[in-house]
Image 1 (tube, rainbow, N blue to C red):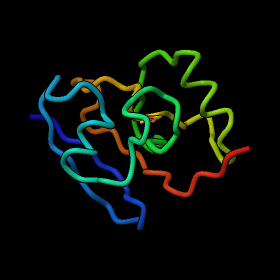
Image 2 (image 1 turned 135 degrees about the vertical axis):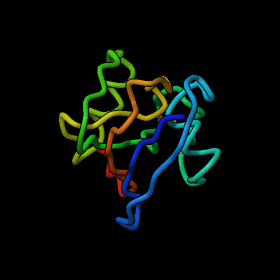
Image 3 (image 1 turned 120 degrees about the horizontal axis):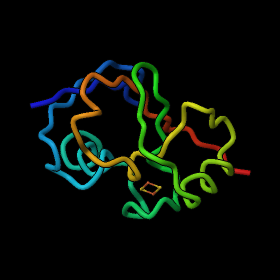
Image 4 (image 1 turned 45 degrees about the vertical axis):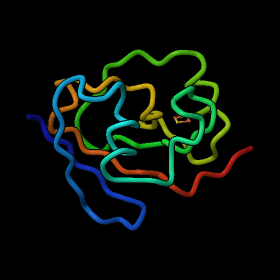
Length: 107
Ligand code: FES
């Protein structure tokens, strides 16, 4: 069992336990177990509702063009920004800390 930490839309610190490949992506884990108000495009990297910013740790998963394009349209996205639906759920996420960015503004 692995654990990650995130700050939710209210700034509260939360933890999520997971097993490797229990879900297809980080977005699906949090949608199913902890959050409801995101994942509008069902993981296609189109909607940006699953925007997160990494605070501690590194996510090495390569960023595809679709994710890069969607993030480029979100004001306030930083180089720490990712779309959780594009991040496979695997052991490399253990102990990563990130925040949910719920107030996205689009160009
Ligand atoms: S679920 Fe829509 S961009 Fe991730």
